[in-house]
Structure formats: C-alpha cells, structure tokens
Length: 115
Image (cartoon, rainbow, N blue to C red; front, side, top):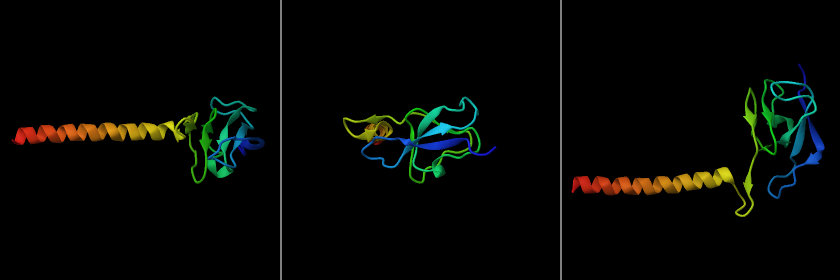
C-alpha cells in the first residue's frame, strides 16, 4: 500500500518542552481518515507506522522512541499550562494520593481488629 502519511515540516508544534515535532497529513483513505486530513504531531516516521489503521488525531503528540502501530488511535494530548504537567501525570499523582489514604485507613482498621 505504501506511505499513508507525510510529515508536514511547515506545520511545527509550538511547545516549550517538545521540540522538532510536526503535523502529519494523510496521503490516502483508511479507517475514518481521509486523504488530506491533518493529524497530530510526530518527531519522525518512527513514531507512526504506515501499516494498519493507526493514526494520531487532533493535537496529540508522539515523540522520542514512542511508536503508534496496528490499529491504535491516539487522541489529543492536553497540557495543564498552569502547572506545566500533562493532565495524565496529574491524574496519576492524584490516584497515588488517594491510594495512600486508602492504605492508611485499611491499616487503621486492621489494627483495630487485632486490638
């Protein structure tokens, strides 16, 4: 089938922490993507396979050694610019804090049951 997208070096990502990422443009129709559709951002062709129906949508970014392949679909990468942490990182921190609280409560219950 050949190449399914090209990297549009004329459409760079403007972000302080991610350098050298550019939008992609579909060269043919596949899945829900149509020829000419503009997708998310990659730093190189390593980041997105030309096989399968994988695609990077909206403002999503795939960088470094990360790779999207098969039928994986990556959607928008949101950043909380107030704290400069990706939202998924903030979610992980919040989950860890909640788990710590739960573990502490379970330890209290365990000590009450043993006493």
